[in-house]
Image 1 (spheres, rainbow, N blue to C red):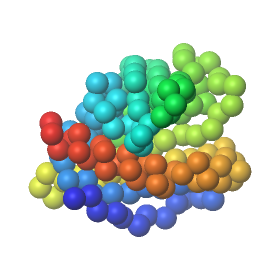
Image 2 (cartoon, helix red, strand yellow; image 1 turned 30 degrees about the vertical axis):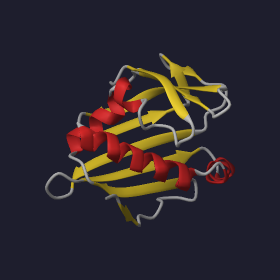
Image 3 (cartoon, rainbow, N blue to C red; image 1 turned 120 degrees about the vertical axis):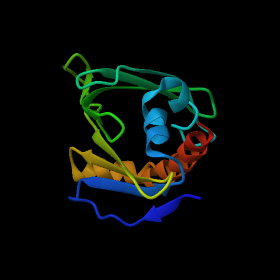
Length: 161
């Protein structure tokens, strides 16, 4: 069962979600980096993730498409800034591909994974925003509830691997 951790943000523009996931770190990393796995957990139900494309390397692009219950799709293009296999992913929507700036940068995500005892992972997702207003907007969109539900879905997928 997933355990919540209380980790404070580093600034007034950051949101943090931290959990102990009952699955090995390698499985959690695979769920973040393999499109077939990511599409199984990335959107909070009843939303879905119909497709994902990922070039998991610094400078590599990602495209995650989320779909609402009404079927409307929302493409989320981005770029990986840092990749430490099995341990850390840093990604942003500030670029869409090959260092082409996006129309409206919103966030940079930093996901860290650490071993937390036998078969468990300390999972910390930090989301830095360009402004306090962007952080507040993300909170109002349901960051804590949505990312929390996704962490539970992530744990379910990672445990099956």
